[in-house]
Amino acid sequence: MMERAESGQKLYTRLRLWEFPDQYVIEPTDGSAGAPLAISRKDGSMSLIDQVPHCSSVRVPKIQTIFGVVGLLKLVVGSYLIVIKDRECVGSYMGNQIFKVTSLKVFPCDHSLKSTTTEQKKVESEFSALLSVAEKTPGLYFSYEANLTLSAQRLHDLGDESKLLPLWRQAEPRFLWNNYMMEVLIDNKLDPYLLPVIQGSFQNFQAAIGKEIVEVTLIARRCTRRNGYKPSIC
Image (cartoon, rainbow, N blue to C red; front, side):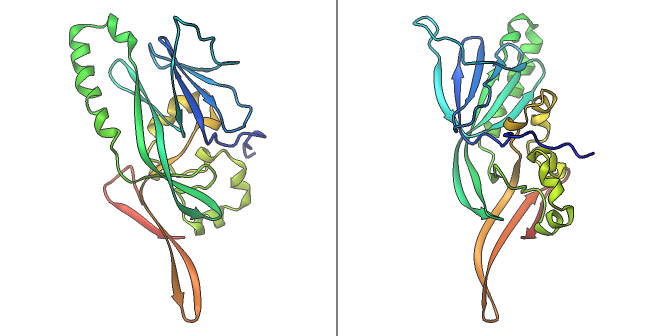
């Protein structure tokens, strides 16, 4: 039997990230009644909490708006939370808004490094330095409602029943840029936070076919298993 998405389990479209000394807290602020997500700054472990922790004059967190959680990247010792800091609406696909990622932000969850060896610290430092490159990854697109990993024909063949699944379960893993980074969120059953992201290009334009003017959407998706792009007209 197909596992249906729970009622009210749509993806969060706007969130507030609180930076506490011991944890990050991500709070939905799009009008939904979802529970905040706490991520340990020691090891990246996650759990839903009832409410954002109390703030005091001693415990003053930095607060910022984000537009989605890309996932958690685990390195040698530490883990790193990657979120969408800014976005740009670039068109629509099957009636749903499509966004381009214009800014990614990496938040370290590496307090456990304090108890590691000098060699482990060195290796971790070398790998974490590469994350600045990840923040500048070009051509990332996403939608809070549409499955961008499949062509319109493939979506039609799957039928309406597939739409009952959470969006990340509908996605084709080969074209899911953040597939690996979503694993911890999947293990914790955090469906409303699981935002599929593709790498490629998105174009929306009109074309004349005889006397008819048709709307054309061209999506090129980069396969995570090989170089190059797979374009499809939708």
